[in-house]
Image (tube, rainbow, N blue to C red; front, side):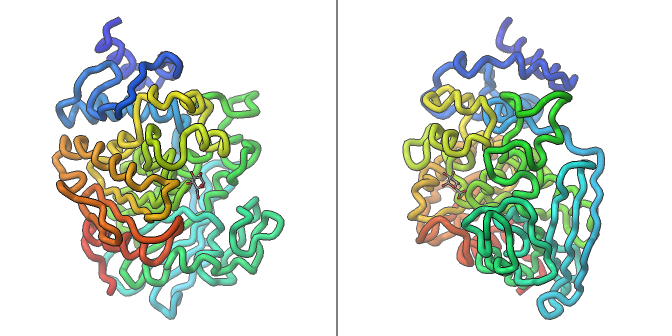
Length: 426
Ligand code: GCU
């Protein structure tokens, strides 16, 4: 079969919604070695992509298939509908500056619900742009507020107030400085946040969280190409976006998604697979997110697959010692976000996340942005410590270590102001 015919058949199968295309893809061991970064504008068959239509109709679907098949696992089909219940509403939040809602989202009758904390500025004449944030420790840590329910599932030992892997009241407000919610309101943005553990507590255990509810009859553990934890967290962000589209206070043309580290990996993946997310900030995401899998600095692929075997599917470890065989690298995931703005933000001392390699990913994704008629990474930009590069593909590296703080948020707000237009805040 000629390469072109092969691809045409594959695309037809995708359109028909069959799973044959997955079976049609070669085993990881059969993929050719590509020590250099694969060209995002060249199909697996070798065919060159030269028009936006070819990108949208051929290469984009192919890359989505490849990333699911060989790395993150296949997402289930989105639910036909979700239901959202406002459990608590407070219109005088932050001294009257904002309205808080605690919302529970149901997307599957048996799966755990997603608990969303939504805070929207009151002083405005139009719908509010929003930052959606995936949090590590529960909504009760984002603001100090006795009304916010504690997660009842497993939480990380490092979370404020964690006792015996469970949340306690002592954690309330423990991540105020990470999320800067009140300042976000002052800047004119809403904040919608949820705990990643609502989708899947971050352990190598597929008996809890969302996964078992999407097993086929008789299935007890994920198949080799089924979705892992990162895809589940990303999928949670998609469901929160479903809800925001039902909320009349939110400007759905200005939805930004932010996540830190492993949740930054989920952030980029979520944006690549859902064009309703208008701006992406995968913060210090590193390996398996924003850093090259072929990179020689920081966390290697074999290490991430060994220490966190549940994050990706069971195909990805086949590349542990053969990252050269990956039919993509992470610049292609950025390409899937084109032409939307994406900011990679980093810290100088966080070499584990390979800040320099991340800059190279933005450079390598730029041809996709140019093909779609926008600038990508600004020409001649150089990463300068503490200075935001605010082109469509943006970059920020500050002094310091692996964390998320006010200085990062100042870059996030400035980047969103540039691409969304400044909201009615200060
Ligand atoms: C570990 C892991 C990283 C991850 C980070 C985090 O360091 O190796 O890949 O990004 O945890 O999520 O904080």
